[in-house]
Length: 116
Length: 112
Image (cartoon, rainbow over the protein chains, first blue to last red):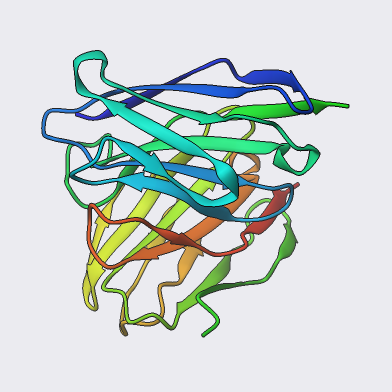
């Protein structure tokens, strides 16, 4: 069964600093991987996804993530944090935790705090 | 193109009451999902559907029921509401099981 671990339930960075949100996954099959962002009182919005091909994936709002199969990781980065990046971020892997292929398994989320 | 819509946005229920959370998508997606989100716990899958007339249990189905009579609609029914069902509920849809999911804005439910 699939699983996702997001290191750090809260991450705080200064405005303009590098953002690094960590995600490790476990999957019995080649995974598709996703990062979602959730702003307060809203639904989840897709930031970026990895399916096949290039392992460095670029998404919206200047975010990118790199798929590293040997490390089973899919960390999310942004070179320079902006106040508007403050939100909850979720990593997800294809296949839900019950073992079926018909969905996604989500991590517990990382709350990103931007210090002025 | 409205995407995924959910109604109501907020609801307060008394213990033992029942209600239906509505979800509609206009993207012609076959796959639809219901999740609940509790603080610090991420999203847990309640039920999902791979097409009209086909539904299956997710990780936390107890206390809920679903139906899927059309491609567009996937209502979630709560029978005999309990305080443990206080949560934020999200509906999502996708083109396929491994594809990205599109989420509705959520329904915040409180059971007292």
